[in-house]
Amino acid sequence: MAKSRTDNLTTKQRSYCMGRIRSFETKIELEHKRKFPKLKYQPKGFFGNPDFLDRKKKIVFFIDGCFWHKCPLHWNKPKSNKKYWLPKLERNVSRDKEIALAYQNSGWKVIRIWEHELKD
Image (cartoon, rainbow, N blue to C red; front, side):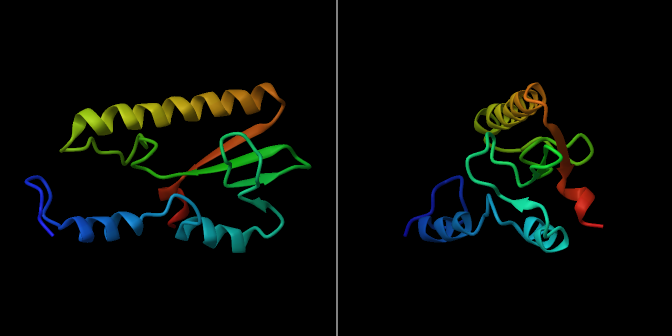
C-alpha cells in the first residue's frame, strides 16, 4: 500500500490506528462504570448521549476528552490540518453548550467532567 505525502503510514496501517480510537466505552468510562454501579451507564434514547445519569436526581454526566472538547487547561491547537480540526472542535464545544442548555431547560442538572480530572 502506498503512503500519502502527508502521512507516514500506509492506508492499511492508518485504518488500523483509526479503528483503535474509541468514542465510547473508553478506559476512563469503564473504570467509572465500576466505581458507580448505581448510575445508569450510557443510557439509550437520551439527547446528547450522556455517559452516566441518575434518573431519580435528574443528573446527567458527560466525561469530556481534553482534546475533543477543548479543555481550557490542556488543549493544544492542532499543528496540522487546521482547516479541518479547528471547525470540528468548535462544533463539539458548541454542541456541548446546546446539549447542556437543553437539559437545564428540562430541569436536569448537567455535570461535565474533564478526562484529566479522572486520571488522579
